[in-house]
Amino acid sequence: MSVEAPPRPATPMPPDGSSAGSRLGGLLLRWWRRLTAMRTAIILLFLLALAAVPGSLLPQRSLSQNNVRQYFADHPTLAPVLDDLYLFDVFSSPWFAAVYLLLFISLIGCVVPRALEHARALRTPPPPVPRNLLRLPDSGELRSPLGDAAALDVVEEELRVRRYRVVRRDGARGPELSAEKGHLKETGNLVFHLSLLALLLGLAGGKLWGYEGSILVTEGQGFCNAFQQYDTYSAGPLVDSGDLSALCVDLEQFRAEYEENLTAASFTADIRYGAPSAEGRATTIGVNDPLRVDGDRVYVTGHGFSPTFTVTVPDGTTFTDLTVPFLPSDPQMMASEGALKLPDIPGQEEQLALEGFFAPTGLVQGGLLTSVDPRPLAPQVAIFAYQGYLGLDSGLPQSVYSIDRSQIERGRLTEVGAANLAVGESLDLPDGTRITFSGVKEFAAMQFSHDPGQVWVLGSSITLLAGLLGMLLLRRERVFARAEPARDGGGTVLTLASLTRGGGESGSRFAILSDDLRDALDAPDAAPTAPEPEVPPRD
Image (cartoon, rainbow, N blue to C red; front, side, top):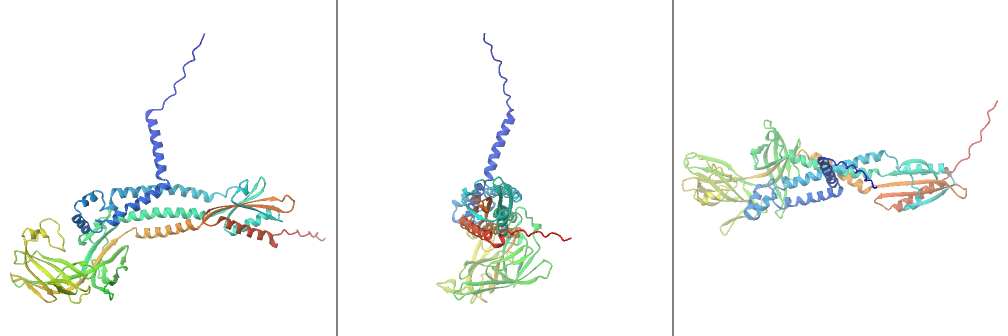
């Protein structure tokens, strides 16, 4: 008769939510370990450098919107595709920010645990002596007439002179000694990565709270730090117009010096700066010598010429000192192009505009004006005068340095005169308006920059370099020693071994240490001295 075994109780299954949560937690943990691995940080750093390449090859809106517009005009098919990929705004694009953020998280997850582990290692004594010292790559034996304790005293003193941390223990085979040094190598490694993390923080802070603006300033004019006054500007997402520092700069004089081959030698600008209501302080700045005031910097980035005109309308009204910067079209000879617009002339229904070509040292060849020297030795200007409607109130943006060609094509602007003028010469228009080329001034291209992270970046760069040097030049070393009585009954046999991690020849270093220990053990003052006989006290 067979008896059926009772059914086994079913193993309780965890709820579905708990099982799914465990799988999700394990998956997130694996992803976190992969993200915080050093290999991942190196890959992300390489991707960040690779992502910055388009920013150096293509024009960026944050630096020059005019260059971006020109790229769209030159490549009408390719430019929209590149724009969809944020290649004209590389450093503010979502994919660049994603790589930057992942690198930041990876460094934190990689460096912080290593820093905690290193802190524990600093408090941990050197490890015990291995059982078989002679199996280590650098090892050997020394004989000494000293006792085991006295021999280890000599070894300990020699190692402490070399800045080793020394710990002595009683082993099963005799007294032992463990020593190590070189924790600064790992410290340099951590300093390097922490400095890299601080560098990324400084760069991010500069992008978030920093701003810069560019403007052309003619001699005798100035500007104040306001976005409305800049020709182009860029600001971080956390910058408000009310946060801008109150600083005004006036350009008193600009000087450009040239070599014999007509290449620029130096640019200097005499300026006066201060608060809007203050008198200001005078100073001189140059291309590599900016003005630095409380974290703000004012650079000279270029120069050019601003022709000056005098316009006299038929009713006798005269407009003097009409100065406008002309942008260089030939940087070598400083030939420049620009425009002067007069939208409001009393008593005139039509607006007036001048479009011209300026030559610092002019020469007419084949009816065309050209420049043969970048210095203003014989200034001349070729101008074209237009009358009509400029379209300034149409709501469409226009460049202040050129005339809207569409107004000419539509017939709203009509050419009414043209001439090549030297200083003091005039052009008379059919309606009686006289235009006189009265002189030329120089302008300086200035850039106002505010970067709150620049000091942080500088300090991080210095500590990063120091950490890199420590990581490359220092080495981690451990030395072990065991003292055993000699088998022949005379003296002590010291078994030595070392382990080295880092640069350098470990074998030669161990040989030098062994030689120094042999000399120290054989020194006369290291030999044991007989105890002095006790003298019995006198009654």
